[in-house]
Image (cartoon, rainbow, N blue to C red; front, side):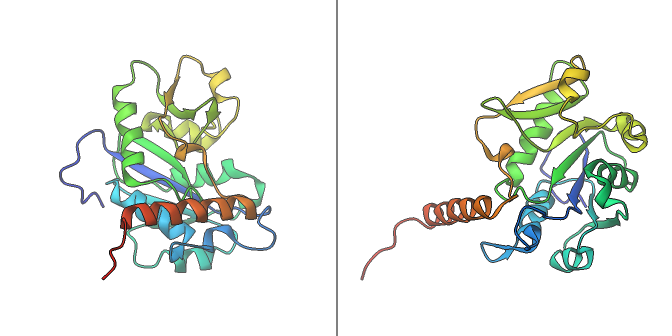
Length: 220
C-alpha cells in the first residue's frame, strides 16, 4: 500500500475504528454524514492512505455494510468485529489481529477525526521515531489527550490479548515509563465528531479551511 516513495521513517500500519454505534448523534450514523462532499469515514481514511502506511485495517460493526460501501475503491482491509457492542477495545484487538504486513509501529485511529490530514499522521510517526523513551505515544493539546495512539508493533500480542489497552484513559498512569506525550501545536488530534453540535462545528471549520484555500475571488 505504501505508495509514498519519498517518505522516510519507520514502517507503520493503521487500524481504523469504525464499528461504533454513534449513540450520541441522535439517530444518524456519524461516519456516513457528509463532510465537504464525502462521507466522514472516507475523508478520514483517504487522509490516512495519503500518509503512506503499509496497510490500513478498517474495523466495522454497526452498519458495517454501509461503511464498507462508503470506502469503496480505497486500499483498505475490512475486519468485522461481531462484539463491537462490548466496547472499543474489542475493535482495537480485532483490528490489530488482522494486520498482516510487517511494520514497526501501529496507529490506532478514530474514523471520525475528519480534520486530521496526512501530514498530521506523519507528524506522529516522526515523533515516535524521535522520542527519547517509551514504546507508546499519545498526542496531547492544552492538557487534552488526543488520538491516534501510536505503539510499537512489539505490543501487538498484548493488545490482541487485552493485556495492553492503548485506548485506556489510565494508560499514562499505569505505564509512565512506556508512554511518551507528544505535545501538539494544534487541536486537530483532540477533535472528533460525537454529537450534532460537534458535526456543525466541524462543518464550519471545514468550510473556513476551504474558503482560505480557495483565496479571494476576482471580479471581472
